[in-house]
Image (cartoon, rainbow, N blue to C red):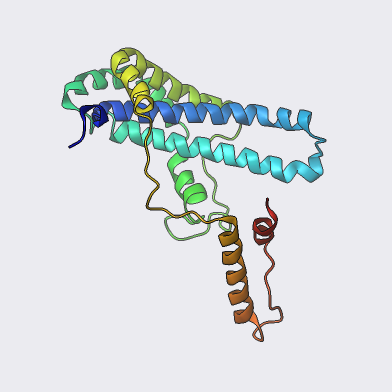
Length: 236
C-alpha cells in the first residue's frame, strides 16, 4: 500500500487547462523574443556572412515563426474547446465572464484568417490542402502574420487573455503554475531503450549495407551518401 506522502493528488481539470494556456503563452513569448534577438547575437558572436550564413539564419527564423503559429493554434483550441467547456462546472460562470471580458482580444486572433489552415497544410502535414493539392505548386496564399509587428499583435491578444484569466482566477492560477513543479514532473523511461554510440554506428552501417546491396546492378549509382551517417560515426 502506498504511503500518504507518495500519493500525488490529481489537480482539477481547470488547473490543468490554466497550466496549458499559460505554458503555451510563455513558450510563444520566448520564441518571439528569440526571433527578435538571435540575429544580433549571431552577428556579434561570429564572423557573420550574409551570403554564406543566410540559409541558416532563414532556417532559424522559419522554425521560430512556425513554432509561434503552431502554439497559437494550440492556445486557441485549448481556450475554445477545453477551458470552461470541459473543466469543472463550478467555474463555468466565472469563465464565461472572463471570456466576455477578453472577447476583443480573442476576436483579434481571428483577424488572421488562415492560422489553422496554414498550421495544418504548411507546418503540421505534408504541404497538401483539403483537395490533395500541394500548396507550393498551386501557389496557395495564406492570411497569417508576415512580420514581427504582425506577430507582436497576435501575441498581444494572447497575453491579454491569459493575464485577465490569471487575475480573475488568481488562486487557481497560482496552484496551476506551481503544482507540477512541486510534484517534480516525474516520468518513467524504464520501458524505452536508448542506443549507445556503438549501437548507433551499427544501425547506420547495417542500413547503408542493405540499401547499397538493393541498389547494386539496378541503377547507375550503388550508394547514397549521408551527412548524418557520417556525423553519427565521427561525433565524440
